[in-house]
Length: 358
Image (cartoon, rainbow, N blue to C red; front, top):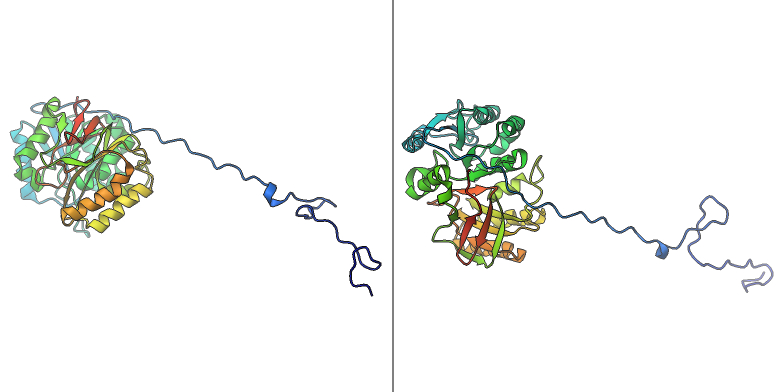
C-alpha cells in the first residue's frame, strides 16, 4: 500500500487551504478568516451637560413664617426651644411641624416614622404662608424619607429657602435634581454650632435677610490645597451622603462644570479614601471645575485627612480650597447650592456671581 506521496496512486490529494473553510449550509461556501473581520467601533457617549444654576427663592423679611422640620434624627426639646428663640429674635415667626418631636416606635435614631417626616416636609413646603423651611438637625434618616416627599407638589409650590447640612445632603440633592431649586447648606435650628456660635448665626441671618452682603465666603483658615481659579455652579455637601446617593433613583449623574463642596464627620481617613474613590470611579466628578472643602471633625488627625484629600483630588487637575469654613465645624458659614460662583485659591474664597436669594 502506498504511504503518501502526493499524487501517488491510492493517496487522495489534500485541498489547498486559503482561509478558514467552514460549511455554512451551502455546498462550497466558506467563511472569511478571522483576520478579515473588523469589529464595530465602540459608541462614544456625549459628555454630560454642565451643572446649571437653579431657581432661587426670595429673601426673608421681618415677620416671615418659617417652618421647622425634622427629616432625620430625633430632636432634644430643650435645644429646639433655644433655636426657635434665636429665630424669633431675628423677627421671624417659626412654626414647628407636627411630627418634629416624634420618636420612631422601633428605631431610636429616627425622628418619627418615614412617612410622617416626609409629610411634614411636603406640607410645610406647600403651605403658602411659609417662606422658608429649616431643618432641626441632621443625624440619619433623610435617605429613608426622600422618595416619600411629593416632589410634584413641591415643584408646583415654587422655590423657598431651605436650610440644613450633614444628612440633609440627600434632600439638597433632591431639591436640585427633582425640583430645580437652589438651597442653603447651613446650620440647623437645634444644632450645637447654631446655638453657641455667633458668627454661624450671623452668616445664616445675613444670607436669609441681606444676601447681597454675603457674596464672598471663607474663613481665615481657608487656603489652597491645589492652586488655581475656577467658575461653576455650587453643589455638594456631606461626602459620604453623596457617595451613598450614587445609582439611586433620580440621583445626579454628573457634576461636570460644577464647584463641589465636600465635608464630613466621624469618617476615618481610610473611609474618606473609600468615599472619594467611589465618587471618582462613578464618573460623577468627570469634568468638575473645582472643589471647596469644609470641616472633617472626628475624622482623625488633620494631616492624615489632608493627605487623603490631596491624593484623591489633586490628580483631577482642578483648583481645591481647604478649610473654607462650612460643615460640622465650630463656625459654619451658610453656603448656597445651585448658584454660580468663582473659587479662587489665591484669596482662598468662594465668591457668588449673584446673591443666594432674590
